[in-house]
Length: 393
Image 1 (tube, rainbow, N blue to C red):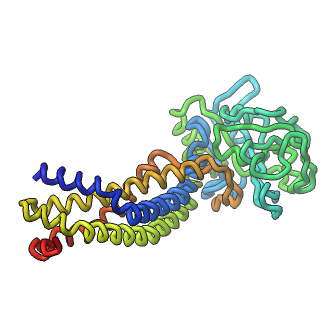
Image 2: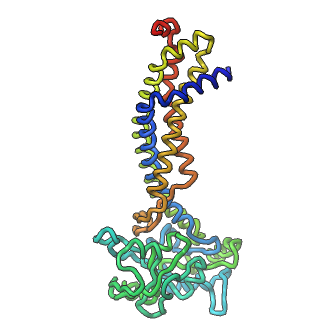
Image 3: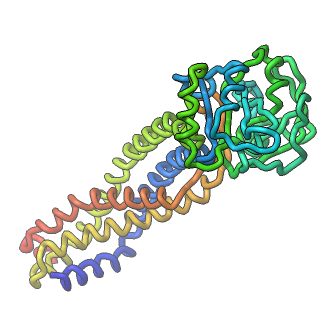
């Protein structure tokens, strides 16, 4: 049986050149599906990578109890002070490594669209870089406390117009001067703009209020002890969240939307590709009617014939999948763009990511299309009456 399968499959694959036209149509159809499939899902992959790569387990975000985002949180100045005085926070000679922060949305045009997009402007304290050790100033310098200076994330500088060192812009009641660019290993923090929180508060008439306090723990194992100390204080009603967990939750809604759309589009296009594969394999079977009949007359079973037709269909689909995967990787991987984060209602800059895992999924999907498309022609070839087929000799 195995020798028959190898022999018939080898004949099938060697004869593909004789049906190059129809085979090419099937390959292109499947490649097109794979390109679209990878293009859409690489958006979700890139956005998720930008969000889930954020943070360190040693960094904790403290918000008002019941809030799941900084936008819905609110803390008074007294509450922020009590949080920073809580035991369990890393300390230096300057005091606790903690940054009470204010988060507002400002309008600013992108480099491709003159209409305003939502840009996150974050007011931070002098300890912000200590709380987030991954953030590094790579151009210019850090803003001077008490001034209208801002530093811009690398992704925001690339995506939005006029946010380079030396540029100025007006938000709220202030004119702001860009004095530096920072990087944060490509995560969501690079989509933000930072300024002194004490300058941002009056600019947006927020008084002595904050939305969150970012704290640095001595070690990741200290989270539970810090959480217990917060909840034990009757003056506080807050929720602490590890930074990686917070940003992972932020990406869930958009990821689900994009993945649903991607699989829906790929499914609809896949139906068309399957019909293309069916047509190609029916053509292959029709052109080899006499050959199949001769093999059957010589004693070859129907199962090897089925396997040979399915193998040819699978081979064509894998070629199409590889071509589509290479094309999608060349076209989309690393492409910079931005989208709305529905949790914070601000733009998040990120890069499309055609990952090995995504490529593997696309190849499996293309193989599945090929096998489904080759099933009916394979069954027809196996059921082909030997006597009827031999009459065509």
